[in-house]
Image (cartoon, rainbow, N blue to C red; front, side, top):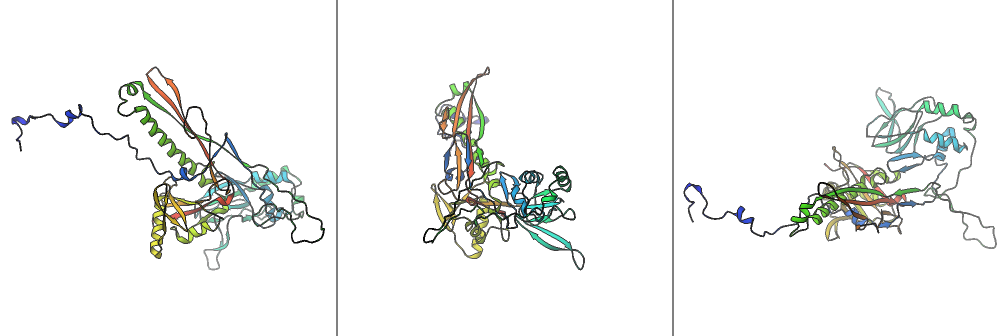
Length: 448
């Protein structure tokens, strides 16, 4: 070993200085935020010019005692004709008044163990509520449990009613003041409250019945029929994710070897844009899957953590399921529950990666599904494809300066600071074709 020279001076060239003259092995710029983006991979993408309309058969079930709702993103509204399920409105036929009445209900999204805002009528769109009363020995007792489609109070009831949520719930509340104002402006409302009206026939899915006859002989009179459609079908407009990439001409000209700086900047920008796109497909309040599941397709866990029983409940609600989508922590929590029961879920391969599956349906990890501070999250299950009336992704291809399908990179020019600008844009959305194509297991505990 050679001893260092006196005074600590170096006898040979140091590695730091030598590296300035050497060619080193380099990696492309790395990015920790890149995820598998399984949702983007499994969604079948449908080409659309800007708006995608989902036509469905008219769904209306009058006479079953339960109120139906329509959800557009996170907004929930009562179907006006379904207000005839209220005892005081049975047989009422003025559609204009029903429309006005439906518009007076105010939506409230409540956590568990919260008091429902008082009102003349409370409609339960989602979740469970408990109506309490004074107990025989003091305190309170649960007098009634309300769930999806139930209502509390009536237009001619004695006064405002209150309840308490047992699970996260969505309710629509009609105040006494709004009801009084509506009655004053429509003088004939009370005169028609109890006018009888025949119940409208419907099938077990709540769709308007198609009249048929079968097994007949001879020449009976065949029933006439038609297939009724929703008068205001849901339309999905493409959403946009955009950013402006800026690269200085000095960097693009002088530091372009061995890797093209502009290409690497663009690659990382597109990765970030695609991550944001998947986040919006899950969480956007207008078209995100978490907010567009039908209220009847949302269920809660039996005990808190996700169990095989809970996933079986999700699967049995649709005729076919292609995949689950869950946060990695939720998948780990499900694995712990399987271990406690001595069950061993299967493993399947998706795009070269091995993932857990249940009943032959893969559980795909997606960290875009939020986990609350209290350790609560959701698990989604989907049927995919337009042919199977499932969940589809929407995009527009053939864009000007298209760089990838549905994504364009447009040159915006060079400013006075010699900075090159590129506009990077992705257009996308998602649609649920029929309600049972998407189901959600809510209030999933991942800390247990």
